[in-house]
Amino acid sequence: MSQVELNIGPKIKAFRRQLGMQANKLASQLNISPSYLALIEGGKRKIDGELLLKICEELSINISDLTNKSDINMVNTISELLDDQLFEDLDIVGPEVKD
Image (cartoon, rainbow, N blue to C red; front, top):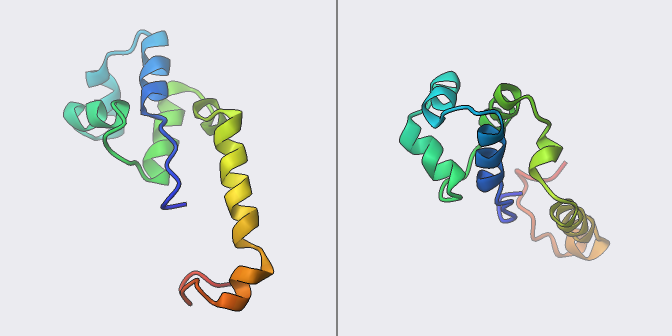
């Protein structure tokens, strides 16, 4: 999913604010700098799965709370397209990605 980016930073910020949690506190709990958290919340930095799971845990939310139905539909559509036999026949996916 490296080319498909879901802009979840602003949603993270909204959930944090709903809890009345300061950015400094969340950053400390995540072992990241407050400035890095600000970049994430501003949609200027990507985050890996591990950090995303930590954020969800600290905010007591599910990953699905950060996405909307159109995001999920887009990812599913792209996944289905890439599973098409045409792409398999073209062999455009590198060997490190193949099953």
